[in-house]
Image (cartoon, rainbow, N blue to C red; front, side, top):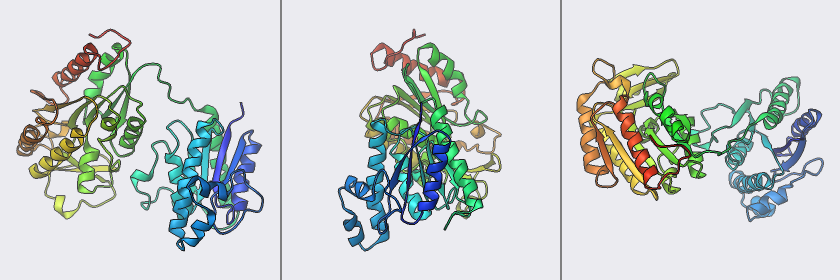
Length: 414
């Protein structure tokens, strides 16, 4: 079947480049719907979705955008309308993927369009600022693809055609090959880190499969948490095992290794049952290329690889984190159970390891007793988070929820 790609951009200034992308998609057997998001000028030829359609979707007119007297405000009007139309076109079955082109202005708009589409829908951004630190983590949709628009600031040339043709082929190929998520079994979303740090996923996955669940494990290093939160926001999960919270501690101290300000909120807002534990929430993650800020240089330190390195949270900072966790869990509209492993929250905090800080762990446990146990059901587990006893405690709660009807499983509970 022919797949149709939505091609978004300012057709008044980038008509040649956008037309090249459209022609390349058609030459590969795909269909195209073109969307113009320009404000002042007009495309050389009419597009399928005009700039007037885009402004109207935002409840405005092009003249409103012009009269704002500010290009940023004008493009935010267009971004709002374009994102709404993206969602509508996909819901109506008219598009199978999206590609957008731009510099900073166009990229800003297209990022909103990408976030308007669910996971599994191919979404590509060809941008002069792809992979730039100008783009914060919370603006990126979980499965977005970005390609640097090299040599593409103004006018077609052989350099930028290389980028544009790759992107055109990639989005069409993705639309043809994608296997969208299908919920034929209830899905449990789990957060974790690599098994050198957190190992409970190895102990939990098979027992959960035996109970009839599908298990999706998300790497809590920023983008993974964003994907987890996006699916929770959509109500995709039957339950979540949110057992790794480094993205929340990173958010608290301003680290770039963050998944955005809504971490640990969406499952609760959707009424999804949650089992939560502070796995790896004793660490602050830094990008491997940056210097450790002076305030954290005297802390326990672990260089994981050339991409990620970590310092430890102090006892007072762990208390602040637990209070933040309590505030977010208190807002949950569904069942919540908090687990506190008393012997440590990640592999590197064991005795003899670089993040071992027993006093800070005691402070974390004390704050759990002060702030969380009064707000939500809490179980203290006399074990390390990577021990079998911790996994058993998680499964015991799952089984209780199956027994009382909170969760429905297709298999037989152990």
